[in-house]
Image (cartoon, rainbow, N blue to C red; front, side, top):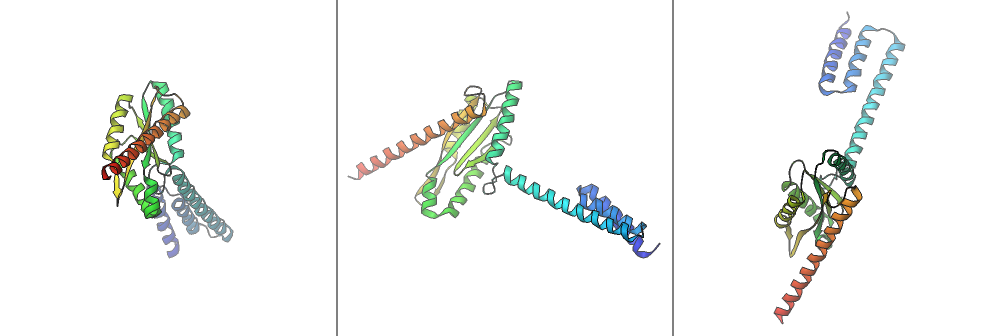
Length: 238
């Protein structure tokens, strides 16, 4: 046996072993290719081996690209919360599970009060920073099984498995009073709406509509309170 043949055999053994540990198709194909190179002395066969190896590398690259695209679909790159697409797909499955086994769950819709003022005053880079902090604080106040997603802009949506309406009120109260962020003269707080399954609906659209409606009611109350507070402060100065 020539020295290069022994080298190819040892290298192929290492690559195949490595492939089983990391589940890499490239390492596996490369290992078999090097065995063939060591055992077969035919230029056409070797050309075929190189072609197979090249195709396996291209296939692995395609798989990596697809995984990256899938991650982009499932995760919001800024806040690391799940995407709106993931939220809707998870909610569909949660509805099926709840309907089949008689389970309860709830969803929350959250809007950040005065977030536009942050963007307008300090710029979008600071606004992005605030979004990340708020998303992190929300995660810290939820359970491992709860699903937080970025619905869009400065809105978040949350799925709370195994949660009743009375429990969701406690969670909403806790989030509202424990999460805020101040920068300069501005303070970002939360407006929260919720919907419970099956009390507020049995379909995805019904639940989302109810939670969204509740969130905008909370937003309207916040604006009225802010207006009243500003008016009272102005009158006191007179």
